[in-house]
Image 1 (cartoon, rainbow, N blue to C red):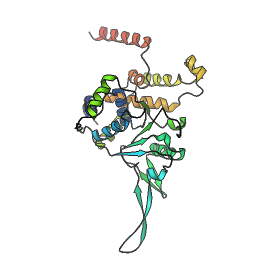
Image 2 (image 1 turned 90 degrees about the vertical axis):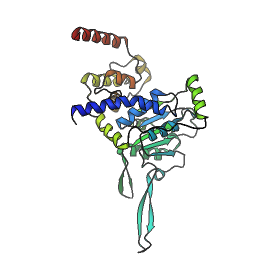
Image 3 (image 1 turned 180 degrees about the horizontal axis):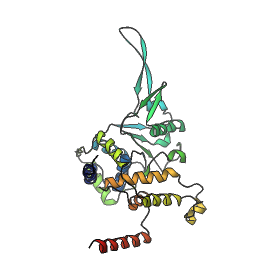
Image 4 (image 1 turned 45 degrees about the horizontal axis):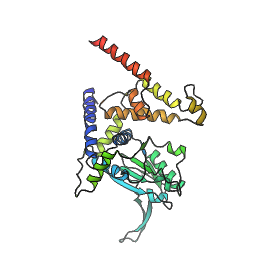
Length: 320
């Protein structure tokens, strides 16, 4: 890909960010930060754990994203009796009417879709949870000794209800590590909730305009990994993750006292990869510390403001 073509694609993705929000807001009110993080995870090729109390529109949001990107959508309601075969599919015996011979045919399950909503994943036993998480990691499933590749792009949004623990099987930390981002849907402000109630109780709802196709999403996922990240940005992400480890030299006192195990190296990888996707979404072909900070929910420090001011003064002196 030429530099001119790459720049054109970056600018088009940056321009599409506002269109994406505008389209989703035709049917979904507010939650801009959550929407952005879901799109970032999709572009980065990761998966999302979506946490929120019932009635905040998690299913509607995921369906809207699937329609806007022309992606096949499947919803799996996780229950205590759900088995791995209910997710992956199963082999059926079929008889040829002409010859009378019988043969096995694999009937694909709901995991064979571009966007899979794993609704209330903590309500199914660990065996089924682990089966889905393995498919998320490997991007294929095995049935009857045969491996079946999952469709591309493959994006899982698993939801959890944080207010009910009875009859649930909380995901262990090792399994939570399979998700790129943990996105929290909070209550809407009163003015947004009023608009939501008015829109959802009206006779008609607006149709969404398609923005990207599945093929374009796959191309963008490949392009995300080509976005450069300077060594100082990588070092910043590593220091940030290291601060969650009680044995690290830069760990705050609260971490030393309250945390037993900090984030692993996969967290550093996730911050940089998601930072690349966020930079691309904002029409930039480089990752900044601001991208990493935004994804980690870190407020800018006074040192950051001083450094930014010094950098701006230098640029004004250097180029004007």
